[in-house]
Length: 199
Image (cartoon, rainbow, N blue to C red; front, side, top):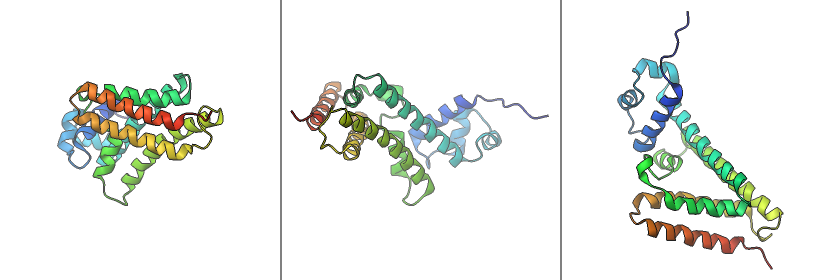
């Protein structure tokens, strides 16, 4: 008779994601995982096969949540451009108090991993997916005349994504909320000048 899992998989993945996000892949030990997941080593391996496989699933979880939030914002905004502006403005409210770090888990993990590894390529794939969502939104905005037709959506998407990740890092060190709001506002104004359609 098959044994019934005695753990909550969703809860375990959330705990592992929070741990990897805080400590990084290499600094997270199996002892750390045992404590965070409240599981024995054998149970962890039976459920997730390996530390790397578990890490990949937490990256999937983090990225899927991030892309879902971005898609929801785009779908609920009056225009694609307004969604991009609002996304940058929202970053002014980032606080380390309700998450392991304001810095993006994907970027933190990318910086930790060596070049030419499968895991690094795996993370880059997730970053590319986020960039493609921004690109598609800007392409639609250009097609309906919301932004200047000379704007290259792919190029601008990379710029916006750089701003997003940079702001998340800045939020980690910024202690003055007003300074953070002004920074986000400045970047929104800068992007707005690029996006403005020709008259």
